[in-house]
Length: 280
Length: 280
Image (cartoon, rainbow over the protein chains, first blue to last red):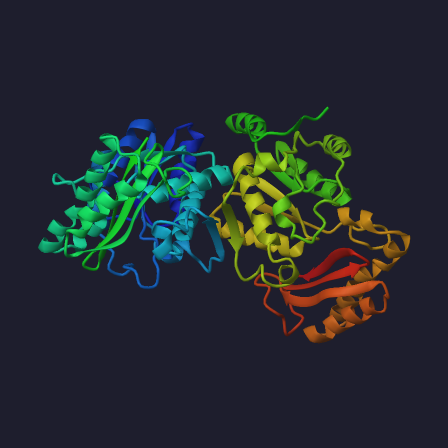
């Protein structure tokens, strides 16, 4: 059975041994409750590294005071089985006290964390950057894998890695979707049957926007209007944002030109879902 | 002649080669204009590591808008000669543009950066922590050496290393003083003859405070009063702070008990000098 280690000292023993042996190490940072999206990251990591560490940690510091920290689904045994079958070497599953022992240090990225999800989640990205920095220093991976579904997170982590000179390759992996188009997310488990159907408005809206661009539309405003219009047809949906931005700077895009990120955040009932597409 | 490298890629070539060869690496981060205090750090690093990198970088982000960034003394040729004679392997001397290329990322430590020097230098420690994080990720040292003269900096860096799980040993080294007691500092070069004499009030005040404790004084207030009184006798001196704090938490100390840090910051003319002693 794959080892599930709880302490920083233990995971360091594994990775330091591998580093001494000259083996390459891949890291897949997750909040657990793994689905096929995570599995695609682990598969990619296994194919590119000698050893793969999956961190499985619901990081409290990236949740705001009124967010779903307590409700966030957890199932470490199922997670460990998935990691093992995908070929990972070890799961790192610390408790919050192991990670934050009277910690006072924060890693934050300015500007690109103030837009999109950062507007309604002001502490989120500092929490992400801090825990990812910690995981990088604990595991010292050669490569780390992040899903394109959290597009802003991927962009912020890449910027942090560049700014702080982490010697780590950040690999972004495509969104994995259910058969009907809904982007895979651990939070999909919050949806009841009616909401599950309603949640399709995100991918439907984004598909409509993407089609418009493929058909030659150049106005970012027109693209956003089509996405927004499609989502607004759904009665259970409440839009947080529909944005079209430069996929590197996250500045608002005037024209629908590469590199373009079209991203949405939508409440379906009480569940906040995100989705996006990128034009490269 | 010791190599003085200007780019991150170049210094990485050196250290990555050493790491592959299994050599240990020590880092001495400095702002250059090296004196015997720095030399004591390099000596210690050379004695404990196979290879020593001295970084020589006047880091703009740790200076406030009205501080002495422009005036700060620089002499890379003399520095390189000192590093070579002390047995360092390479000097890393980047330009600010090489270190900060539209950077948006900051590493900050809360609470212990708000007291002592942090009160009058609100951006200083975030600048220090960010550049030190970068240097750690670039050089990946086994050990890094900091002077006890910047006592708060040493404490903040140790806290950051613990919180972010850097796998680096932080070594603090004793204050090196001139024959008459003045703590060595690159900023001593700002002092004219009269100010140079006046600057002795810092070490004189601290000595008086230390003696009081050795003689059994237990009130931190009494110790501070003696230090303050001694400094106030000097007409050219303007006290920024005289503090007695817990040497780990930097909380105000009521009693003069170990671990105790007694620290002062004093303007001598326009030059701000710091000094301290620790009771362990």
